[in-house]
Image 1 (tube, rainbow, N blue to C red):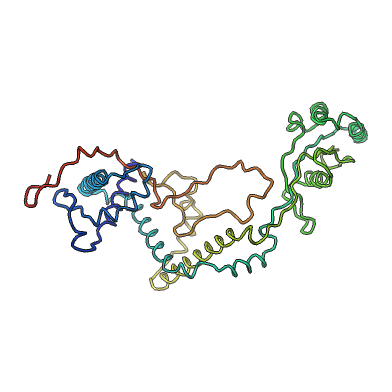
Image 2 (cartoon, rainbow, N blue to C red):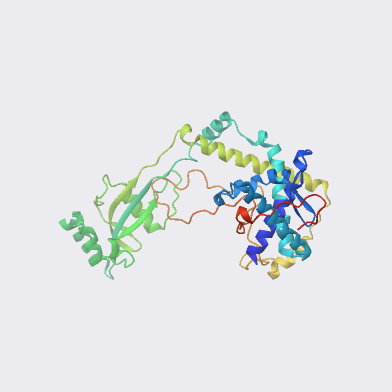
Length: 374
């Protein structure tokens, strides 16, 4: 049902944009379906969709005409079945109309939303740390935690002086045999990557005990080195090894110029969008029943975040006219990105499935004027 709905929506859009007239030559009928003419203008206007579906390689004009015919046949049948009355169809057409309105309006204001290089330089100068990649460490530990605190400290000092700890596999072996941290003891004590706390702001994204270890690891001069002392935390005594170190990097303006220009352009579009919507709202009579909204919010009726799609065929949509972006400088250099790939919204807002295209020799000629339409 969802695929069918998306296709019908695409068909309706395909045909709706093809209704413009550009002159007598453009009105020539390439095909007729139940008396409805499919003109040269419609063929040209549909070029956007053929570019959008370029992976189908519809380079043959006969194939393109056949797609127009099949689309019109399906569109007429959808009208016969009054599918425009279905909530999911109305909802998607509603969203597409909004997106097209915003596209046109923001295009008119494009010259206002495009930043200059000087504006980008000013932004860079006003935000000296915004694009700075923070210092990171990759570190490991051996945790010694015993009921008797003195015995634990003695064992930690003994392991620290053990020549084996400086061997390539020695730290991991000692971690497996002695570490009380069973979540890391079988992986050489590896605690992964972490941001080094900012000494000026005294902020850290790690737990207190981890912060002490991170600072110790960052002070080690060479990768593979062992911290010269034991680190005491609320969990016990730790031996710390540095596995990797990425110093903080502050890029030049030229290195982040494109990123800043893009961000300022997006900010400009967001402001233009807000100004346009606020202008429309000021002209219309907008009334919100705040008491009812509060009542339904408290009862949970407006809490739809964990519900399935509200209607068959409807998929979550991006906020119209507001493209998303990652924060500047994210992810920081030195980190391996293991996240999920971002989904890119298409131009129509919904997935579009093209039906199979008939071979050119299956296309029937247009009947002569005055003859019955097939």
